[in-house]
Amino acid sequence: MNQLGTQTQSYTNEDGQFDIELVQEVPIAISINDLNYAVIMITPVDVEAFIVGFAFSEGLIVQANEILDIEIEEVKTEHDDVPTHIDANLKLTGRAQHRSSGIMRQRKGTSGCGLCGIEAIEQSFPQLEPLTAADSLTASQWLAAKQHFSDYQEVGGISGAIHGAMLMDSAGQFLCFAEDIGRHNALDKLIGKALLEQTTLADSHILMSSRCSTELILKAVRAKVASLGHLASPSTLAVAQAKQYGLHLIHIPRRAEPRYYN
Image (cartoon, rainbow, N blue to C red; front, side, top):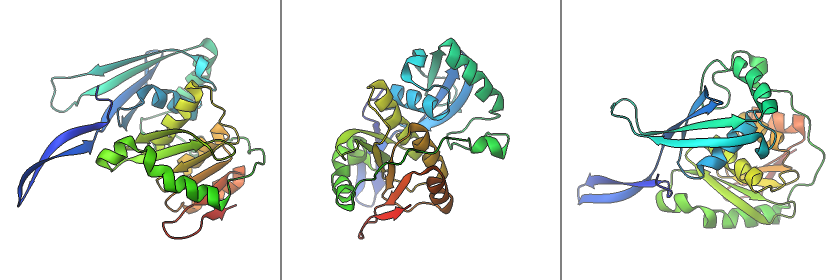
């Protein structure tokens, strides 16, 4: 499996034929104790971190040690309509399996968007506990994070067309970075990395390259981070939900001071 997350493709223009690195997008089929759960399009880097973070964001696990094993296999098929993909099967503890069974009964379909495939509107917006009050970063700290953001974009630096997510501690110091073609996946990878490394998410801060949508708010609240910053503007519902849960939501425009939606 290509760990760079890019693949060489050829294109032509009036000057001739050239090679270029494009970001990879592959399906990953996730199963829970051998039962199909979801099929999501991802960039195949930090796959294990994505699986752990996704399981956490879905409420299947509350900590990484509830996963006994992750079986990951790259599957190459002979059918033109089924691309090469990844099969991932999570073996959960008894307690996590019991918890996941209830979630799986509610899940009608499979999608990476975060809301699609849910039968009832109430299931789309779980009742999460409001966050304990904590300070956000200062404007100068957010601007410094924005300035160094591209330094950590390994895949994005090669191909572009990919979202990034950066985790910082309560003092604004860099902890880790994740990239994926899907903004939800980038955040799941970041959360998964923190869980695998036993890094405390509570009272930490996250900066993302994408716009902020509702699903990202819910993932951040579940992870108990203090602040969620974005380099693109948020949606109205994202602002409303951030206020509801006490999450600091910040937009850092290209040529303006950070905007705090509190």
